Length: 369
Ligand SMILES: Cc1ncc(COP(=O)(O)O)c(C=O)c1O
Image 1 (spheres, rainbow, N blue to C red):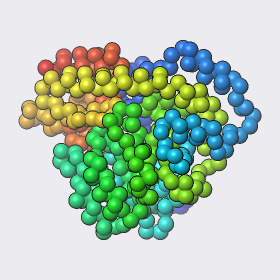
Image 2 (cartoon, protein in one colour):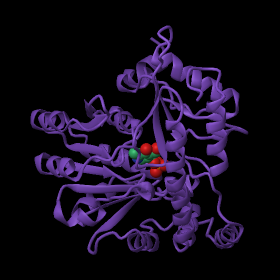
Image 3 (cartoon, rainbow, N blue to C red):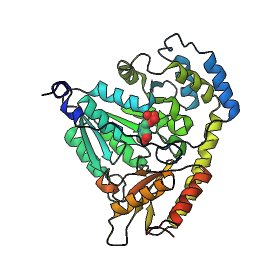
């Protein structure tokens, strides 16, 4: 037995590290980033604020001013507070860590955001999933049965869901909130692109937490996630938060940028309009199905009409073809049985989307129009 075999948990040894595809010089439509940078004047304002930051000190541990500004900007209900994370990824870890009693379980529809399953594994929590229905909508009966049978400590609902882009209905989420024995986390990472939110409904449900991030709004680089819930609940999760988890650069930049939220909101509005144009363009291709999306990405299924090629193989060919043209999207085809033949395409700038559609139209594959 090697030192590593003796020391590292077998379930960790069996994993591969999270792979981020190299994207130097490519049109990057794989990671749900906002393609627009910050305007020059705003960059300068952030730069000036950063120049004044106390680099020699630990950051303000509670980040009180930033929390207050986030609550105000994001319409967190009165009497409710937020917990901050180094991205919402960290908040997911904190939730799992705090709830990891022996035998505890976390439930999520699948396919959904992979970090929940990873975090469950890291924290020794049972991960339970209920597959979506074949049309990628929620299997509510399946979810309710799993809740009854396993009584999960946590239920994660990405709203809209990654990678499908679907919004579950109000009635479905209400039924889950009422049936749950534990906590229900509504993960609104894609809030800037969605027509609805559960934030204002926090006071109705004691077991509801609403999680969000600034990543998709245009600030993926600063890594700032936040989670709102009633104070008694948040303070428990705050106990597992590393005291200085949000660094001074992030806190300082966010304080400036949240005061200019209109700039980021305007960019999100362009992307929502671009999403519509992209849907229309993709729908004009042969053998392509585009799922309705309330996020800044589209799940697209390539159905091979040529019997020699499976849907999965066609999606992979399209993925590789786009890559050869300098366009990076995410191949979901092998990630879940319900996603065979699927690519996930982030909505880019008008020019990037045009280049994507142009490339697909002239593709030497079954999909060209
Ligand atoms: C549903 C969902 N939640 C959370 C995240 C993570 O966001 P962050 O950048 O804040 O860690 C993602 C990122 O893709 C996501 O899709």
